[in-house]
Image (spheres, rainbow, N blue to C red):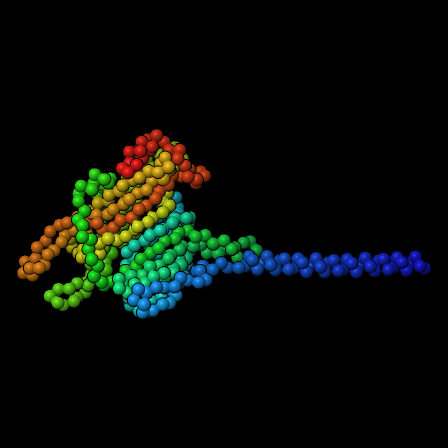
Length: 375
């Protein structure tokens, strides 16, 4: 009897221990699973939690301003030969996104012109068919200059895994500091004329500039003490960088050489950064005389790290018609070469299979780069 009682007590003790352990395991499992799901379903903040303080030089207002654009999709028109976003189109997408920036006066949205883009980093590339958003934070406003400075980022959208949990990883494709200038306004012209002798320092190439490569903006002019508004033309940054890309392609030997470089030598050249991008001329450029006129791209190529990195100092020029209307009865017209825009672009050689930087360049390319001005 005592033996049976001892066996029964041992059995009950085992069962109680088993149940307690199962409860503990189940609680631990559920807690871990909940924590895992909580981490997975956490959506990363697309905008910084504390946007930078906006500084107004006139000290009339101080506020925080930020926005996130609607979703954009990468279409075939946005891509390059590698089916990723073409480098000039990032500026275009920033322009589109800035339409959604908060404005006190919606009527003035179209009066802003992107006049500068600096510290642009090409970190990754959205691929054909992918979606992304653009975020913006206003970091400075100047009422005196009618300008705004925005910190822009192009980022991927959060994705879900096979269980439907949100992925925490958000890719920053591109980032840049963008300056907008409000029109109509009076913008002082560069004082200097760009001498044709500059070709001694720069590689030079001319291209026709067609009407679709211009933008219009409102301009304020003063004539006989009467202030009037009229439209003038300028070449936007997205078109400027297209001209610079054409010149770099020609410098590297053209499409055939680049194709051979990729297929036979396994080398790709990509843009990794742009700095000091600036529209230098917003003064009167009338459509009747300037649309279709040639622009001149001048570039100084500076090779670094045995040709793996090439700094491209670009300038865009045009012979502008200058009208002197001091004599209102018979105004005179002259032509002067003016600096329209400039930028510094950094390109890097990559191994096409590993996508890692390489200085193992073919001899013909080494000879070309070693002869670069500014080496």
